[in-house]
Length: 624
Image (tube, rainbow, N blue to C red; front, top):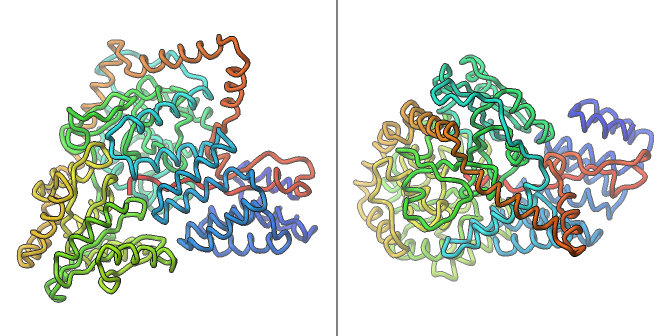
């Protein structure tokens, strides 16, 4: 029954898997693996309380069961219970010192708690044990964006090296049957796991609605783990307009690449980059003649198989020194188009009007709130008498995280009594209404906010941002400039502080701006879905024309990759063969890591390490 449960799990028939695991436990009350695997299924169904119950039951049977210790730590991390999570994951490592993915999960925990250097160290510990860990490798790349400001080539080199290594795991298409007719209707494929109430979804909705489906047929490849009302709305929109919707959750990335070829996709656009549940393995197979990355990741993917990266001239200025494997395509306006949540609710009056003091705030995640950011924020608060700071993010339900945050600010001269720390707010309406608590939003650097900035502006809260040397630093520059708030963009930290002080000095002007900011944003290019999509379609057409003329930006990088591989295969010593073998063993599907764990033996439950379903954890999407 246990093995049958594993098989049903592999087939994504989770209701049947639950029945089988429960029967296995009934027949053998010592089967901790069945309890563990039940916990994974409940966790993926967002029934976290039931998942915790299952993991704890497994641990009551086997107190040193490393997989359940790890999995319980993952759930606690999701809940923001950082101390409890750290305790569980550290116990998992103590029980199994070579448990590579437990170090990866420890890295995610540190990242969520805002300690990026410790997160990167944990990812690297995972990679020392398992050099081919896809989760740790990609989580490390994402984490580097939070602290690197682009003054050297380390970010680029690290991404490029990962991309070259990753490409060796997949066979690449070198020819396609798509007719090379420059002006014919095109098939545009979008692949993402984020077609639900998620940061990326607010920026992909406009194209889905406004694409001219007679000239640009849309195919959505949805790797959504758990669909919601927004998923269903997207599906209905696409199908009603004559597009195609494919659910690819749990399908091997190479098989997905085969589907893309069968659908005759001309331009395949991935929306995830090195973030959770990505399908970069599909992109590595080069199933479409033209391949593009957009929205979900603030840097190069490093994949030689991607031709273009969509951006704009403010997020990536023409004189930028930041390097990319992809060719940059700059849209005429902003590279983002925001579709506001219908659950946002009305704009509230500036709280300073009734409070008599200014409240600054940020709803960005802790990973973006670096020590330098806190230093600048403390300067602002200390210079504005009686002002307050409100910060909201998931880990603030944990006392130690709250205390560390407050202590850091106190050391910078800001009294803890002037700081309000809010935990995660689950309902979207309540989250949006929480902007009523702040007068001025403070952006982060060198990794600026994206969805949080758009939400802030839509709720009438002006945002202070700062330009920098890399795309991640400049997203706020692009958004604010297109809304008409260029005057809130600083060139350096001192100017950032001065802009905040200037904005805070006139409550009447601040209140007036708040009441007209939503209308200003709604009429700006940032929310003009129709014109944005025309510009996007024009960019797609230009890409296709280049392809028809034989111009494929990825060709150069693919040629370099082939030459490099040939150099490795022709090397006379044995070390090169060993390296190639190591690379070949890398997991080719993140879904296998996240959901299914290792293959089992016939009597699987008698051998806990290889048989149990392990809930490896990857980083959340980087755009929020």
